Length: 271
Image (cartoon, rainbow, N blue to C red; front, side, top):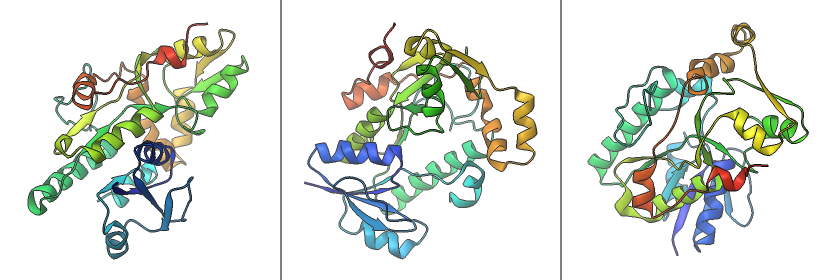
């Protein structure tokens, strides 16, 4: 039985905890507030405190980072892909077009350099927007979308409701992170996926409740709000992810992980 340190108790941290515990592993969750989740151990920790993080990680078989600063703090608090022209795979060149993508690419470069210098094993999972019962209110398919749709009302979304998009099921992300944490031979690279399939937000709304509707928030309104909100400015910087076709090809992950993601059709069946 191995021991794993998970940084962050958000939806992905919780999903990964569940996946590891199902495998019989011991999990410690580290957060600034000491958040508890189920039977996992918890520790109050600021991950930027290197001595404290070192103490917490001592004796652990892996450290799994499942947290992020707010979008507008990425460049400051963090030590990807750019605009796609087709399905994204493990072979797609990194070509970040905005700050958050540049931070992601820089972080991966830092990790691979550390692996070469210190002999540690590193890997990264690059999923698409996640969804699921524990996804919370702020994700694109979170409660702010599903609640009005289930009630047959109108969901208002940031992007184009008719843009084709890949979606990653939250429990599948947890399973894939657990696989990475327990399969050393998969380390040394980043992995694209898992993807439950491709669908527009309008199609998903129709599957949940044909009486519901989906409308795009006016871009002009968002731009006005962005004048006063750093967070909205950063959301607009990646607006293209929900106005252009944005799909993942996770076939390499499926083969290497021996894992089949949960299909959208099983979660959102046709009415």
